Length: 478
Image 1: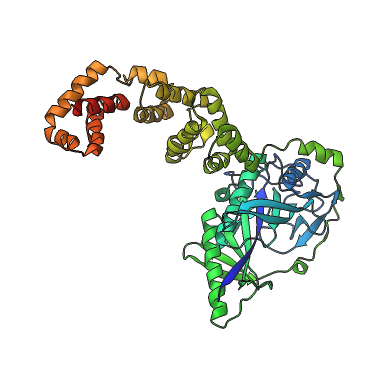
Image 2 (image 1 turned 90 degrees about the vertical axis):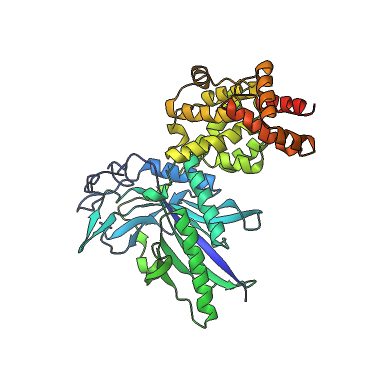
């Protein structure tokens, strides 16, 4: 029997605000000493009262608009009650019955290669918990994170494979970064997710028993955990067993899911309106004002790159994954007058990406500015240096921050295009390699590449390869 997976995602993204959700504590806590970003409000000391962070509300509305959600005129914060050591209040201030944004959608590429809509049930505001640090014989609690504004984005169960869930998360992260509302860095905990997954016979419209999978702290672990859990559920059913609704954790070290606890339902949390916070009324004029701040989003930018610059869709998709890369490309293309945009894109996605990945830095933290890259591409296009020399020059630019022309002039890298000088070299190589010359003349014309390679080696890559090829073809044809 064939089965299909039914997957929904719950994503938590820390919002980029200066202060926490309900107090004035500095929300930039990463790398700080434990329990140094706390106050009576986020530590839930008696008599301390919360105040809503307006900027967090604004960023949630902005995200809701980008996700095609409806923005509620009235939202209510609620107490979500559960006891856990890293939850100072014994409850979490969240939203339940009346969230801030609802009924949106996000488009991804389905497994069939066609556009697919994943519905967004809600995107609501809440506060983050603290963090447990486990040491030998004890668990320590760091409350620096407690109270940081958290945006929870809940999808409908519209994904049918681990790959679709992976693409959904990548797309969502890209949008959050485009908006500037979150770093969405999973490795630093700024974006965390849980998956709800079940399986059913292919073609059935009856949902199976869902299992929640937690501890997904990287995109790779999301894909691996879902693939494992889907396989586990199918094997359980086919062996005559029954899938039980539980919360599973992903054990990355051993590559399998493990039971953590029975799955909670909404009533287990005993939600009720937060008595210390008034209902949140959102003026339509404010929503319209926020909507004007929406940037060009990834899909729209990709389509424009295809139209405006004549890029292939795959190349455009690569460039728009990171807004700073897309901006870098446009500035380079604008400065590199006369250079085909596709060539600019190839240099960025090829040679520059290779250097960035090797150094572990972002495109904004390296010295090759768009104008400097454009200068290098002009030297290659004009024939002043060849492509291979251009790659070597780019490496030096990346290391030193110098202009391409400075490096070429100082290191004597200008391309040799003197026909008389190259002709002597070509004739000498032919005379020293008479057997290869005879093979060419007898019809093995592909060996011309070997001859060109010899000349390029002797000139340390500075000869004009096109001119060298022409000279070899002319001399060998005699």
